[in-house]
Image (tube, rainbow, N blue to C red):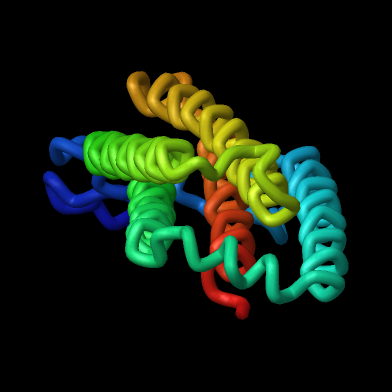
Length: 217
């Protein structure tokens, strides 16, 4: 005998969506005929991540080589940086990564409003990072420390400026996520996760820069 589902109960393969509506398509990739993805996002983004990691590794290796040749001068210049501003910058970006992760999780669950809130918080933290970085640049310039002052500040301004540009591109990826989340029918979870991978990569690169420029003595 065929059983009749109780009224108001979701059928198999459906899950509650935002606002109490049911959203179908909750089956795992295997059930829908698509192979499960080992890595989040599109493979092309991971190729870019690998390229960026290798490029920054080369920059940092060259920095360490020249630092070893003139450690006393590097230490003297490093003392002009503001450790608390660097720490605030790092905490801002690490927190932004947490909110980006929450955005991806909410998007996966179909909670698009929560995902939107989290991605906007991510963007706000990124703006705060840029404000802190510009503040430090201005403080150093007022103190007479510029790109051509010495070898340490050449590396400092070069690495932080390159990261600054990467973060600006990160705001473009945030815009793409917002566009995807505004309409449920056009949302691509793969694109959302691809953009999130880029943001996390930019944050990781800053952690490496912070460690070498501010922490390592």
